[in-house]
Length: 214
Length: 207
Image (spheres, each protein chain N blue to C red):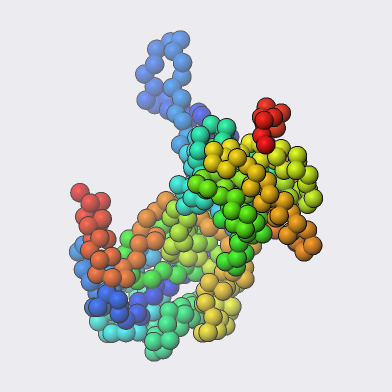
């Protein structure tokens, strides 16, 4: 895929070079990189600053504000999106690293104006209080159910162990994911975006670090 | 190969309350600014302007523009809606173009550079695409580019559907959304308030 140019730093302008002997060369940072990424099934291209996070790209450039910024440092999981089917903290991934990949945000789950069964299950179980963590929870749940249609309760807890909720105590969230799994089992798994399994940057490795999740 | 442009200038400006194509825009009119952006774009070899409502007044505003690079066509059925004007314009394009770009005349904020960026996105796209929609913060804007191969599908679109949106949905796998950070691509002039705000923005940019 046409895309990331790796010479993110370089191109000294000799004509204007006034540095003395032994000084470090002046590095002119290249300001933008071209990124080609599929977002919620749509092919998107943009020239973006090399330092732009995937979260900033989704929210600020593409207006997809369903993905939330909580801590901004990979601890809370509010910014979880799927990259090639794997849940990723989009605040920790640079947007150019998504070049050539398939990104799904919470906006990409509905079909023809109808909520995804996982979203419906969260509503039905009342698994939402302030709601801020829910887009991330739902994306982690989506990754889990795409890979494992019949997860155990422990597997559900592990899958959302990278998503912090300060309101609910998780019980209803876990129940909602169990409900979604039941709803999805008989009919689903037909070619939804994000269900492919190529390796990406994975998160959710906090299971062992967070054993008190109940 | 080069591209064609279709400028849609047939509308009745019902929400504006007066003919918006001939409203002042700097030292020109709104329609002149829209047409000049296409005429000045390096990749655009022909510009078809579709007239309808008050066609004479709009044509008069464009009297000094170069022919035959710019051609005026009249859509007698403009009351059928924008799709009828799209079809009129697309039908009038020559066969020698690689793609055509569609823009409404009520977006005078679109520049030559905007056309260049959209054409560049089309030519650089790998895998190849048939449609390029420029976006600003995720909102689809104009000029929207279609590969010449879609011409007949545009002409065959039914009037009881969603027009070009149906075509885009049908070819979603071959549609590229190019996030270009150019606010003029989404700023149209539907109401008097839109116009006042757009004029303010233009003045701010010029000072």
